[in-house]
Image 1 (cartoon, rainbow, N blue to C red):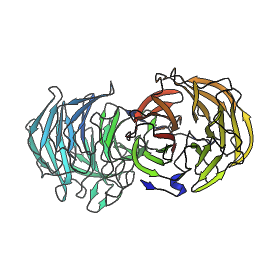
Image 2: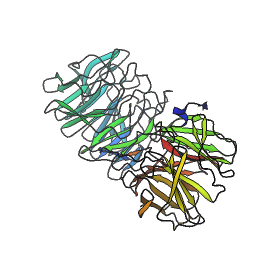
Image 3: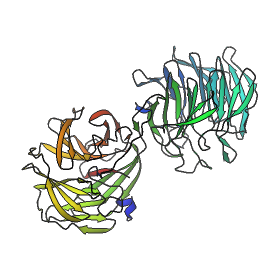
Image 4: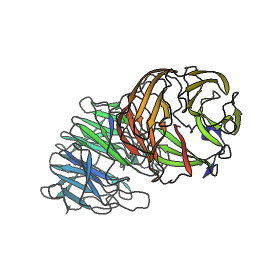
Length: 581
């Protein structure tokens, strides 16, 4: 693991409980809703199409080893479920697909000319006449009426030829070349009696020109350039009278890392204009599959950055709606090995793990990480350490350790259970809890300087049955509330607070997790709730290694998602917290 000594890596990324500063935050609405993950698991470069009320996706590749996939899946939006169907040919990677009537078609890709038809009524694939042009990758296609079309792509050179498929005769006819320059990795869709192709990669450039094809005249007409930056490897689909293009990569060469986009644009052929819509809910993405069913669009899998490990998430887009969650936040889990005194950090982009960092800290099992927040006013969280034996409380800022000015609380009767700004002065305060008496006290701080204390106005929860497991804003008033958990009954309750003043409480709408196998180990935003800003609840199962987040809207449970790294089991390593970074 990489040893880290710089504060911007060590300290920004850690917190025991949801460290909170009083701020006014505006959350924009969007039209994305996360659905059940793609049934076939992680992948990129898959093909997809829709037939009637169902969507279909398959093929693709897991990594750069060219281990091509052949599985094929059906999505039913009425149940939100994926069902595996008959496998297609191996090698359907970077292929082109569309549907005509009740039949789906897929062809080209991986240097192939092969063209296949899928009939959902019989769940069977039939090989059709090979594509009329050269074998190629990264072509683009669509259907208009009872004909299908495939054009552009890369056969070793960039191409611009354009072909029409007639399923009635199983024949290909070459049509007028695409109106723009030769290219691959373009976007395409059809609206009514017209088809559209644009963007993509030509020689060493990325393009943003956009063209309309009229099969009645076999002619191309250039339309308004795409509204965003030039790009390739986008997702595209049409809903009714509008077309949609988004995400993709924006740099040349495309192999440059951290080069993906998340914006989505709507094209209106009636006005020949582009309008930016809500960013894709899953964050930056490229090489994903996409289709539309009725009035909704769907995008799934792909890579968050080009040449990165692919994902399996799947999202629904409602142009008229206001979806909730976006899988595009940076978050981290802090781990502490109390036996060896090792510390490490798992970093995530949304629910996807991408790095492990190690860092120095206090040595010995007497020292515990009890919180993190910005104690020194530099805008970055600092680690708060506690030694119950000596009563010492130390703030770690990078490699420096500063003692709090008050350290007379010795023993385990009083526990630090969170850090937050309780009086909205922009300074981090410390929340203490005495399980024996029920007393819960806030230390008001000025950096590491103790100023005074105040009891919460409610202190009638006595004993170890109920534990404070997090601090976060659950009602959108920009003030920290207290999350309580009862492992015996499974009850999980939020106390709504105004500073130290107790206002009321509310149970979470899901309370069926009982016992100590699963524990709440932190609050952080891995998947953003753009409507309410409610943090996710991070659960940990030490036996299996599973790490799961609950997506919440206030106290209302919406759904859950597994984090992509779950290989650390046993009790040697403990989660010391989670925070956004």
